Amino acid sequence: MRKIEIAPSVLSLDYSIFEKQCADLNQSSAHYLHFDVMDGHFVPNLTFGPDILKGFRKACPNMILDVHLMVDDPDMFIEAFVNAGADLITFHYEACTSHEEIKKILAKIHSYGIKAGLVIKPKTDVSVLFDFLDQCDLILVMSVEPGFGGQKFMESSLDKVKALRKRIDESSLSCLIEIDGGINDITASFAIEAGADVLVAGSYVFKGDIQQQINHLYKTR
Ligand code: DX5
Ligand code: ZN
Image (cartoon, rainbow, N blue to C red):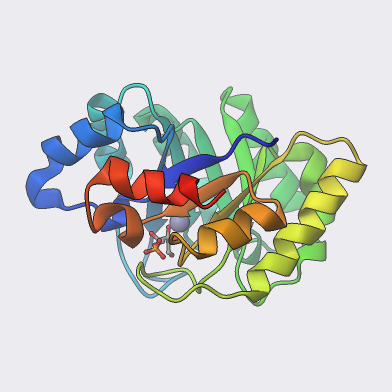
């Protein structure tokens, strides 16, 4: 059976009790921490820069810091997020203008000794990713329009996950599949069944006791 990982998204963390929430995350069974970077151009919202990631690096020393770049110019920010402690950086296919640019950015992230991946928005065809799977440690499939937490899960994302699972398994690749947006105790089971390895969950994890909410996501198996 595939190992399923949960990636709580700090977009929904309660920053008025930052230390307590980080302590709970550290002690939880989640190994990934999902960090959404929004620049106000690629998506209509603004979030965090590298200095905030440094805080999470200190507060959650053993978690895998999963940086999801929703920015127009991903190349510009890679070094800063690597220096701030990122373990994995994903960037959007839609932010790039050519295959060469995508390959160059993936290679650049890898040159720092961390993991790299590509993300697609809900309206982007999954087949655009096929040329890059052998260079990606992870593919992130968006199951909502990127920009905000708390949106409704788009079921059309499940066919993309299935297509990726098939392609990755048939080619014996080790690339993981992550899904992001609208994950709760019901949609988590659909995502796992379709073939996802890593489930990002923001509003669902932080709306109650962190470990209990994570348990509900695992229980869907
Ligand atoms: C949305 C972000 C997500 C967000 C998910 O653009 O990429 O990571 O935090 O939030 P929920 O789980 O509430 O849909
Ligand atoms: Zn995200």
